[in-house]
Image (cartoon, rainbow, N blue to C red; front, side, top):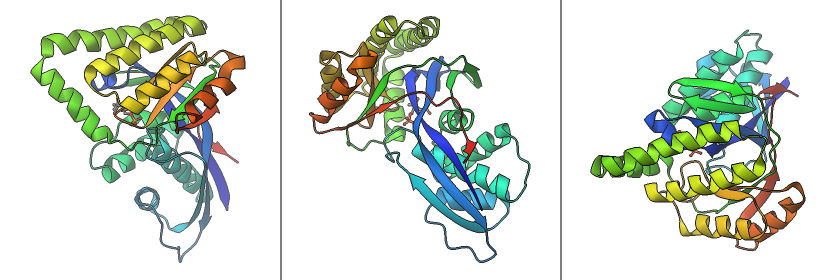
Length: 286
Ligand code: PMV
């Protein structure tokens, strides 16, 4: 019997723009999802299509126990983390010798199958290798990590990534001359952010600009805006939605001593806040 864990993720910059080949920056975050796998010829039926997919992909049968503190369906990559941790645990328990790259790719294929073609490789890749990842087109590159003081605010408003991606595509089709420069600017924001990773004040300002551009794309939501404004008023350097938008989560970059205050300001808006930081490890044996 073995237990493996894997982290969730946030988009720091460039969500939606990455769909158009522009650079984006994602980061693995705590909390982790823990998955225990045990060889078993008579497995208990899996409760999730992701876990079913993992056993099928690896060609074995077994029992599994999942322990997750991460909110699901909120854009923090919890399904990717479950898939990555499950595959890693199966790999270990059955001595299958798959590399991290193979685990990341198989996890992506499972997500894509379960989500009917609508998964991005970002979540599974970041969860597998951890740290900060710069995405440009098909390439994903780990960059030196930075310890950012982040607060995540969950609006508790459900959203659909597929719908948000389609909404942005519609805007692109209708007003390409307007929207193309917005995508360009989002890509430029990511590259500026990478150059300013050690300067949280600048990063916060870039986040605020990114938030305004995401609003232009139409993926904002009144509750997201409320949490973003509340965070800034409570002392954050900057704040923006993270992931697909239209609900889900936002992030606030804070001075170290302000994290609690920002989290309280988000909670006071009837949302759920948690303080988080980078997870540099990715999938790990417990
Ligand atoms: O819903 P999330 O957090 O997995 O984010 C989606 C990010 C998009 O850029 C909108 C889509 C994608 O596949 O990258």
